[in-house]
Image: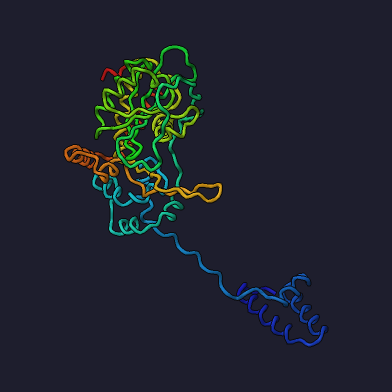
Amino acid sequence: MSMSMASRREYHQVMHRRYRAARTKAERSALADELVKNLGYHRKHALRVLAKPPSTKRRKSIRPLRYQEAQPAISLIWQALDFACAERLHPVLLPMAEHLAKHGELVLTEQIRRQLDTISRATLARRLARLPCPKTRRYAHKPPAASKLLKQIPIEAYPWNEARPGALEVDLVEHNGGSTSGHYAYTLDVVDVVTGWSRRRAVLGRSQKAVFEALDYIIGSWPMKPWALHSDNGSEFINDHLYRYTKLHQLKFTRSEPYRKNDNAHVEQRNRQFVREVIGYERYETQAEVIWLNQIYSTLDQYANLFLPTMKLIGKTRRGSKVQRRFDQAQTPLVRLTSVGALAQNAQDYLLQLRESINPLRLRQQLEEMIVAGATAPSNLAVAAEH
């Protein structure tokens, strides 16, 4: 007997009522035989249907996917902000859309604007999870462990809730390609633990003169006056020369406890995100390559400080053996600098005007082009350095 699924369900219900009303075993057996004959069921299945027939209720229709119109804008903003996670992307979604629209990268309609404003963080995370991430991972190995050095500088670490801007962490990153022989380049990485403002400078070798000139260059161009300097236990920092330098610039100089990298966690995180993931672990050993690295850092520093939002730890709660951490809303280092009032008015106006004049998507594309050009054609670095 051939019938539609809907008719079959109705027939199941009718037979079920007759089966429930039957008084004798012979009547129930006859109903099972009838169901087997009409629908061709196995007898065991026929008995199950008579005892509990399938529901006649229609399945709930699948809800259409929301925020479809805003999906291209979300993808473009995600790319412009270096494929940030949903927690960092969500607070700046609509402002960055307006910023990109001003630079002609997207058309922002009222519907798209409304969807970007109302989408939740969880929904945004689900949308991002469906997008392919083309970001190239340029790191493959962990950096070698630091050597044990002389204890010339007091051991101290910034408190996790440090609130005074100008507390700097500093570190030196090697570009030796896995071999410590010979002369090669280093990157001096400096970060403010309160605002997240960071700068980088490449040097050839780690001599006193080269490191001090790079540190003096970075501190001299810092947007406000620092008050403290904290380093790891590298010999390029733990020496009398740097100690005199910090005294001259009235900086409180401290160092990490040996084998405790978490004492220098802020700059270690920037080493990975903005040096290893961008530059990689290749060997650079010429002055032309150092100039190329500094050209990259000049673009990267603007991109990281003006556009990339970060989250900051604001609370810790211990629950037994675990510590639950709470983070604030993601903000760019520039926003954190202006919100704490650490900038002079002229410096603040300059940085805000600079941010408004820059297209972050084009800036990131320019950065990628510089990195790829240097990685694929090292011989061109000398030519690029001359220009």
